[in-house]
Length: 56
Image 1 (tube, one colour):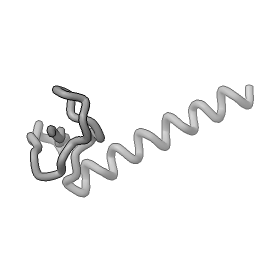
Image 2 (image 1 turned 30 degrees about the vertical axis):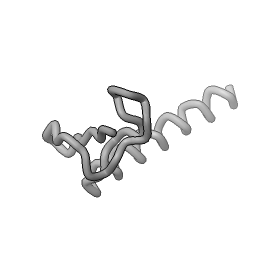
Image 3 (image 1 turned 120 degrees about the vertical axis):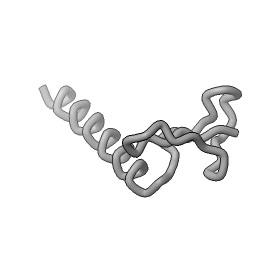
Image 4 (image 1 turned 90 degrees about the vertical axis):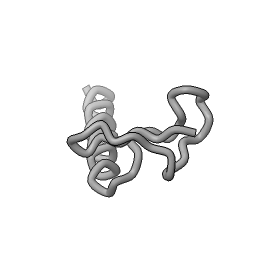
């Protein structure tokens, strides 16, 4: 039961981190979805509703 609680807590923390990143205008992803390289903060697309995806 404790492992399940830790997993749920980790998922909530990850979700909050994504929301916080979106609110700050930062990309939601750390890696480029095309090449898998680190995403650059200045190469992005805004999907609306605070969802920003970074590319390399």
